[in-house]
Length: 458
Image 1 (cartoon, rainbow, N blue to C red):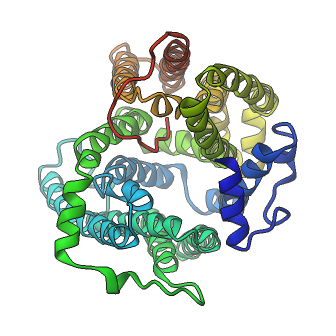
Image 2: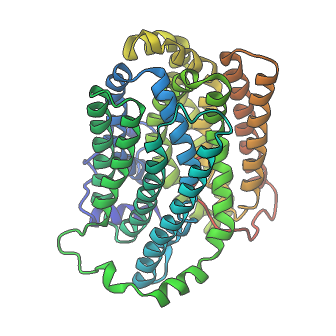
């Protein structure tokens, strides 16, 4: 399977020396697995680098309060975007025919349009009621921009599935770079012009839109035009054929995303937008490098563990444990360093008013390390056809996080204590997921017909 990934990348024109971060060469032993990880990660490296490099500029233009409003906005967006296409976009690369893949991509975009319209109606109604008193902090323009951003993200997802099916890896890389560049450029420009939190929101929406336009383009010499393959009959057939994705994977995606984003929302609601802004910056800086390495490792591990589950079941546990050990060894030094010097680093890089963000990262050290190790391994349950366990874990994590933050608020705890309680709940949930995966591997007869696989960010 890994060899096929490498051959596909070679056909796309990417040479092994292109876009290869050097640190990834030392991540695993030399061989096809290492090269595949480096190549997949290389496609995301430029966009992630833009996020990191522009952050010190953005934090000097926008206040923690403005960043907090934006964080609440993006948290709600992230939860809904996990199911904006009802997960039909996940089926685009695996459709048995090119015609079916094209119609699934179009169906995903249409579903995104319907979900976005529904989101606008709900937002308009909530703003009229103003149940949490946030109407004054959230500009009216955001109510209009939210569904547009959600729609752009849905089209981006659908286009990404189609590009993956066409093995257009260069176009996927260009899309990510354009998305990050447009978003960061507009956020900096509009912020300098005094747009406030609205500048951050406009930049994000424009970034998704620009990335989607790149994905919807055609590479020179491409013979297949998706528009010529579309028909309502085929879309209906595709919707029925892959109905398990909206019926099963969409709900699981909402649970998973809710568990990740609910802390940001509750911290903002309970302690104000300034605290939400500090927490958001810490997460922004943590997510960029962790996403770069974690997603690359997860993609390659998914291919290899799926092969072993089919052909050599006895090899799943050694691979699982070996990768867990290596992730721990690679992730521990930088994460512990951040834990030791977080406040000083954030104050120096982003400005004195962001020192509190570094303090929040300090108390989340164990959570970061547990996440770095466990998340890339989470495809194990899909490979073992035990997807039924994942929604149970997602629901349990959501309950733990909600309980920790509500308890902190009820006890009148300070924001830092609330973040620490949240971190404890998240760490416990990741350790539980690791134990569940290890148990699924170890028990005889672990293979079981489950639901549909889901690309998740645990």
